[in-house]
Amino acid sequence: MPAPRVLDVRYTPPPDLNSGEARVTVSLEGGKDSSFIAATYDRPAAWVKAEKGGFWLGEPALFVKRLDEATVRAAVDAMAGHLGGYWLRYYRALPGRPSTIGLGHAALDRAQDGTAVVEAVLKDGREFSMLAATPEWWRAELERRGAPYYFGPLALFLKKLDVAHAKRAASAMAERDEQLFCRYDTPRRTLPEVLDAFSSARS
Image 1 (cartoon, rainbow, N blue to C red):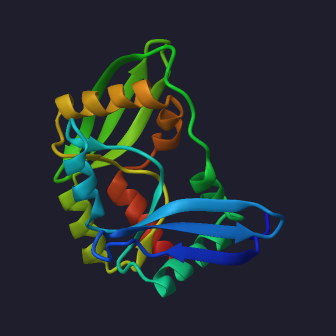
Image 2 (image 1 turned 180 degrees about the vertical axis):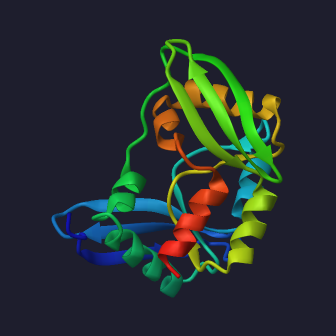
Image 3 (image 1 turned 120 degrees about the vertical axis):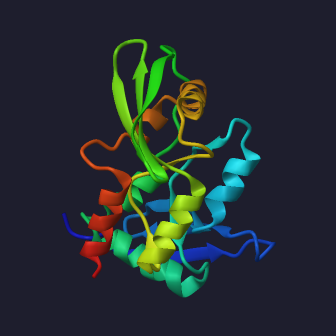
């Protein structure tokens, strides 16, 4: 599939320039838009701190080393050029509805350093594997790699990598939007492997 043509990128700086996040709207040829949050690497720490329960989950965010128009535009161009604009479509997905089934159980797997995989099972038997990280690991890892930006599979941010926080986050997903399980589900790779692939593709 050919890459979609980007007609316009509207980057709205936040009222507080130190907040570390802004709304980006991308207009594409054919009349479609994609709107998402752009956030600096340190922003997840504030999100987790503000969220009762010690976790953060929500809409996909484009992460940038610097929150400026040049960096955001470079990231948008890369998003449009990858897999026929797949990530612009992924970031455009509308929210769903609370689960009518509910969470069966959740567990933590492959926890190491600041990353893990949260395994969640709904009461109807559907299983999901979701990448997780502490905000501190996320910031340090992206800064270590020197990446100007990151887009891709969602990371579930947990204050602590333990079963209690994994269960709280998975329960919140079921209560808020069952579609989040599908959007966070990332089989086959751990978070370091996802970042390795992202870095290699842009080296």
